[in-house]
Length: 240
Ligand code: CAA
Image (tube, rainbow, N blue to C red; front, side):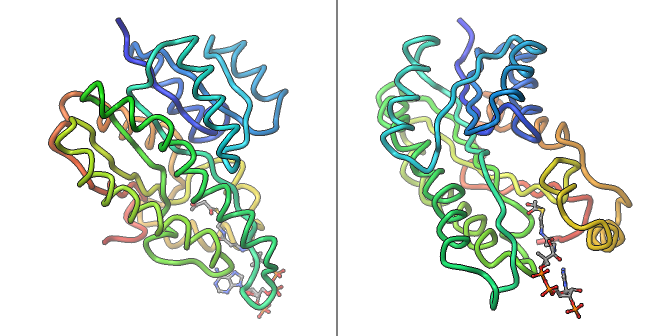
């Protein structure tokens, strides 16, 4: 029987590459999305991966959605908390709304995604938790006090979960992508984006597949002793 994997924000960008790589490796994959029905329908049509719509910022919606996925596919053994948004603004212009939107989706959303799945992983004595953090959680970023706080918070989450899950056969790890060629990065003003690319020793943006391959490794049996780690994938832009 193939393992069941859930990828939040799994129908676009990095999440779509992760969902596809897991499916190609033989997993039964469920991909969630929040709002873009058209992109989700296209994704399902081209990949055969079923999509589920809920807002990760809403605990009850997450719990109900996860119950639906498990009824369809079976117990979730691999969870990739990938869904995230930006609401960039210099701090003196950042509104409480921009702060809360990003905290609710990117940080509380990680809690809401893992929490309903965790008891089953503990009972079955197997689980793989992968959280998609960011280079900007490691180094901070101009205009991203909100986003950087959530992405640094992800690292606290996985380091704590790793200690709690280790004896139950569960690993929890993070990946910190650098700047990857997705809609999120393409939304950065072109001049700013050019200046960012100039800071990447690899001389290019990363590809979503660069991140998907790291997820595949962390999800595999080969990675059972890698727990609480952060994999940095940023073309040497920031070395921790
Ligand atoms: N470093 C230093 N200065 C910067 C800067 C940076 N990275 N980005 C902008 N600035 C400067 C501008 O040059 C400008 O300076 P001047 O006033 O001297 O001209 C000033 O900051 C911007 O001031 P504004 O009041 O005009 O700013 P704004 O309210 O219009 O906001 C912005 C503009 C939202 C900051 C926009 O520049 C922006 O989006 N910057 C990019 C932020 C970024 O890198 N986000 C990452 C998104 S990708 C992602 O998050 C994925 C991931 O995980 C890697």
